[in-house]
Image (cartoon, rainbow, N blue to C red; front, side, top):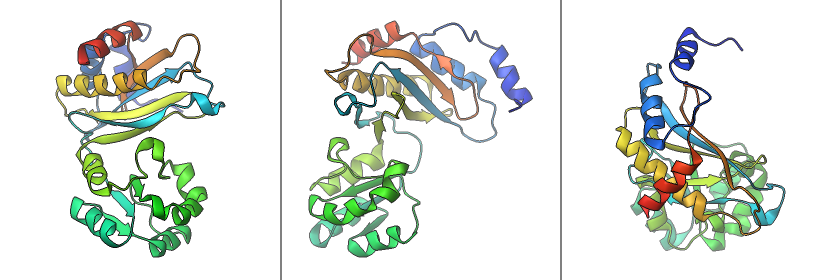
Length: 237
């Protein structure tokens, strides 16, 4: 794929072989952003895990101090009082079996997070082939199967993000927008980096955090020094 002139220019303005401090990296991302829209800023962690092993999966949620800058659409599978609780907390779509049937039949999937009460999982579980490939399946490990639907909806609306490794052992997480202050991006980065460190599976052997890079939607990836990440995590605790 041919690169745009803006992308080529951005890649010339930093050393691609250098690993930067988290603070310098987010500054570079902001300075190198060239799109006319407010680009998302995302971080990618290449982890030393065997993603084929069930006991080495890295998955969970973390609340970012400054949110992601994105409006999060939340769907909740619940009934009766729990459905009302979800609606009052600001859920965008709330329903039970009828909603599950609608989605299974090819209905609207325009949402970012799916939450379910435990009693709804026999119904929601049938949506695995639809929601699973999109990373939308409610899961107890990520806190999206819960009785406390109200607080969970509010948390995701306020900036909680879900993370999970892909089949190659990589974790990709949004940490804000290029319009954020550098300090806000750094603090959001520290929150997710600390969470990834804490989520290290006991079965994972050897070096854990192999490579880390941060980038904007259209911009190049900026490598981050993993040693300095450990120092930043200690400061954030």
